[in-house]
Image (cartoon, rainbow, N blue to C red; front, side, top):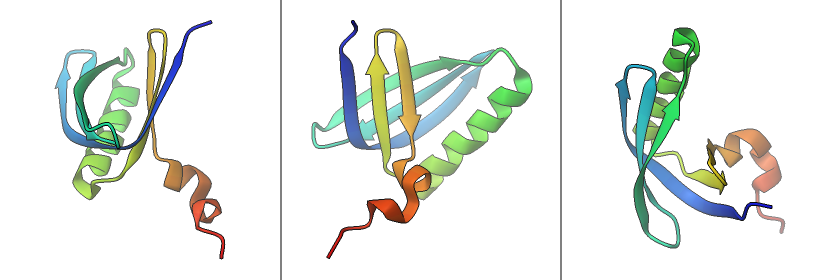
Length: 90
């Protein structure tokens, strides 16, 4: 089984398209990571939608969760996914 890597509070720095590829530069987390991720979207409509979403996260400086396992990488907006369920209890 592939090892799972999870980094919270990663922020998108830049988003660049090149043909079917979308290059996303990220930084942040408690580990102070800095790197680039390449996503490939064959469908032009899906690629445009993902680029819009990624650039929106970049512009808003949205903290994301980076998840990788094997050759699969995902960026997820946990606050949007879980909403107020992430609010502190107290």
